[in-house]
Image 1 (cartoon, helix red, strand yellow):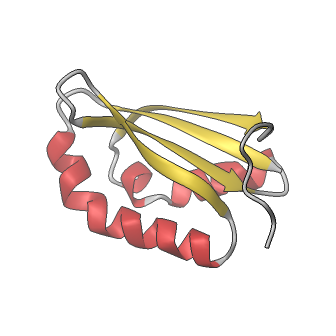
Image 2 (tube, rainbow, N blue to C red; image 1 turned 180 degrees about the vertical axis):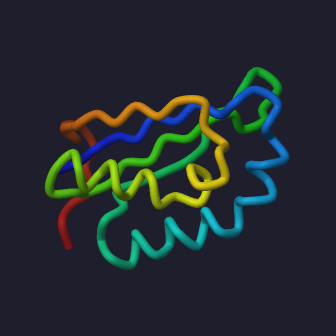
Image 3 (cartoon, rainbow, N blue to C red; image 1 turned 90 degrees about the vertical axis):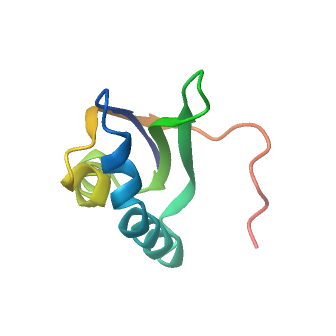
Length: 98
């Protein structure tokens, strides 16, 4: 099942995000290679700078989604003010299964 990880950065932590980005990208690439990543990308503020993340993962249950979220280098670096994890149903424009 799919889970949306809705992450809000702590104010004033853009440098933490920038410094940790290479490890975060490698982490997402690993999830993608394991077929656990549906899609991901940053939320942007009015200034166009990233201030959060939306990551949608495939996991068997909430506990597994929580474990994936906790393993994200951004989470380990203390970037996030909050993380909401919600089960999600991809209804429209879902890519065809290969």
